Image (cartoon, rainbow over all chains, first blue to last red; front, side):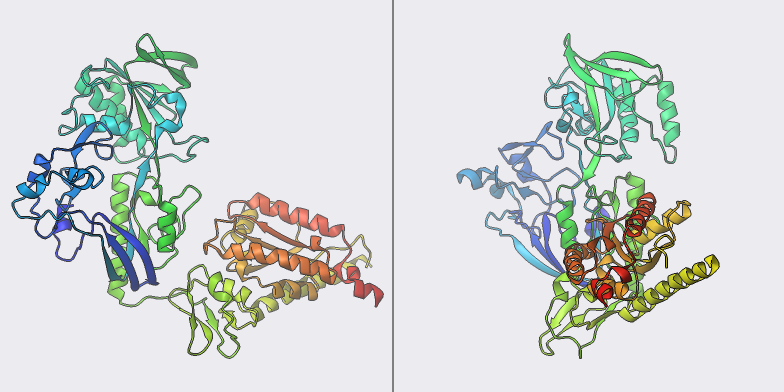
Length: 462
Length: 144
């Protein structure tokens, strides 16, 4: 991350949002809203003095998963790139109550600028790679697991923060009271995955991170760890070996998803049917960890529309071809990498990101793009300029030439669907290789063949 | 030509990405469907202009089907939205000129629905067998 931040040819725009995208491969124009972070990036050295002195503590629901606090002027996390903090204007005393300005006083370079405004940037780019990631599943949607109701039901992300040495508990795994070390822990797999009521797909990463959590929680607390899984999906290099290692370490694996979790005698009683034993079990534990699945970003559909790509039924970005072109999209020059395309682990994300980068490089290296031969063309003599084809085009590839009073197909944008051809009332738009003449000839040939069959049949009958 | 020996002639406009692939799947899965259908591949069901359908009837087809991707699944994002809006109008027009609307079918068949494709063709062929050949059915032909 640091390397990318320092690279002379990479401009990192964090805390920014794409507002609009226009153009086509090689010629995209992107409007970006760079949000006001109230800190001058050019002056800030990232020393962190402002964060230290800021008197306002805010519950950090993002990075610390609601377990820890951050200041009103903060960096999202310690290793964030660039290391420039941002003022959270909703909580900052100066912005809410008009007093304090402590950060301005302690800043050695005078980088704090309370009057900073959002700025709009317009950049010209040739290619776009989308890597917008995923959202973790909110386990409150499955009420039987009791997340939010029972204090000692945690999400995997919360436990992950507790396990971190720099985290809110300094690396200790404790119950919600902040001091009791759990004696027994149940980890529940497939929360929000492989479930007809939430998401039917497998989130792919949960099995392995659950195993990792089981290993670390056992190591840190000495607790007895139960894993309630549907199927253990440890597909990947050295993954199965890790699974085997945990089995030999003494983690208890139960093949079944819990039907209920109840608060009984001060413990969380997990009711689950072990499909291997064929038996109903009641497991009283101190702590339950929910291995939540991955879901598309809340705004994935809006983002897809913004960049002119499509999503699948779940909301993941759709690749051009699931096997043969997994990083390209139907819009030339727009590539996807990582979890925005579907759940995947870190090695797969890195591989896909490298592939996307290589695809872009090859386009840049070629210097020109090859387009499909089957595209639409407008016969300017026939076109009446009614403009009916323009809104029908899914790719906004048709423009109106006001000087000639006719429509014009932008060849680089046209994907050859022919919707405009089917729409044009004056037959001025032709889709190459699927022209009316070709289709009608094909049709007449087909009907002729069927007629000929009829005749031969009749002759054979008589 | 006896009514019994009558085999309806069907022209099907199939979108390249969903229905054509679905038909391909039906074939490779060895699913049975009547040979009355002749398929014309189009890039998108949105390519099918009303004139093409009318022309098919004019050239002697007894039935025409337009199959495309499910709404929201279109390879070209919104091409089939146009089909969905255009074809009902055409259906009304066909009725107006005396072609039974049952002779015209618009349906969404995805590339994984080989069985649905085969079933659709079976049902459509059966439906057409219940009708006389289009040449005899057309009002002006009957009078003339």
